[in-house]
Image (cartoon, rainbow, N blue to C red; front, side, top):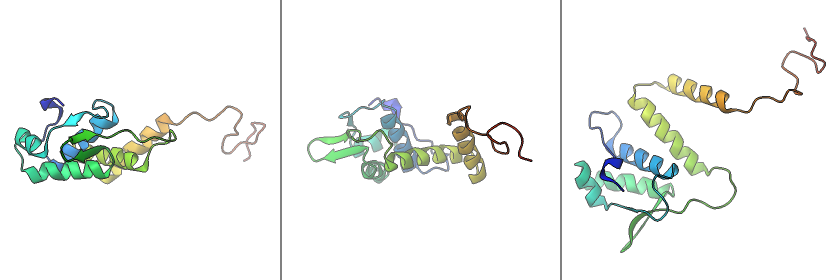
Length: 147
């Protein structure tokens, strides 16, 4: 992992451990950090970022709880294998992405309503369009108005 991959903004309202967790989660979920890739030790990450080791340890604990990394004595901390199974996203992955987004949005100063509106807008833009044969609300299947 490159040293510049994770940065902490000490002036942000987002706690440093959450900034680390969110950035590493994003790197893993997007494939920039791949399965088996070794992460720095807690002590090394803390030193690199100028933070207390407990801060880095908390970020790693949360990533491990989310199934994104694995820590083994003697083998270090590595990116975990992606979950196998159906193509549906794992609830933990969705929760991680949602938490990453909301943390970033809050760091920009967005309130809850603005965040929810952004998600609704994104969902409506990414939903597949209704098939032409589906009746529109307020019209009958023949296309005439029901009013």
